[in-house]
Structures are given as structure tokens and as C-alpha cells.
Image 1 (spheres, rainbow, N blue to C red):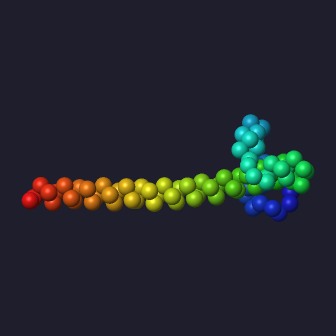
Image 2 (image 1 turned 90 degrees about the vertical axis):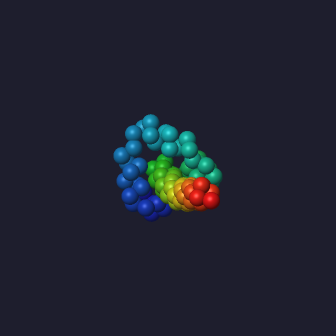
Image 3 (image 1 turned 30 degrees about the horizontal axis):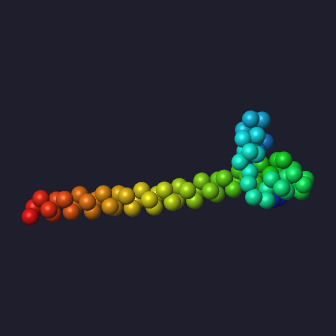
Length: 89
């Protein structure tokens, strides 16, 4: 396998079931399916790249959700403080 993706993703691809590999292939977008179709990449290389892309997207999503949750908690704390202040007056 070419050194296009990180070795840990290449290893994960080898352990995928046929069904999981098909699901992963079905989620490919952009230039990746075209490169696979034109045989510029092997199926395993394309799967490894897709796994890596999805992991990066997941990390970005988690980061964004953490920021959203932090903002929600901060707003909730402010509302509690505001309602306490109103009750005291």
C-alpha cells in the first residue's frame, strides 16, 4: 500500500468486515471516488484515506460541540444568576 494515509488507518482497513468496507466506500465524496474509479488508488488505499478523513471530521465535530455546550452552559449560568438577582430585588 502506498504511503498516502497513515499506517494505523491502513491497519484498520485490513480489519474491516466486507459490510463495513462497503459502508465506508458509500460515504466517499469529492475526488476520492474518481481516483478509485480511474484506478489511481487501490481499494485499500481509498478506504484508508476515507477513514482518516472521517476521523478528522469527527474530531472537528467534537471540538465544535464542546464549544456549543460550553456556550449553552455559560448562558444557563447567566440566566440562573439573573433570576436570583431579580428575586432579591
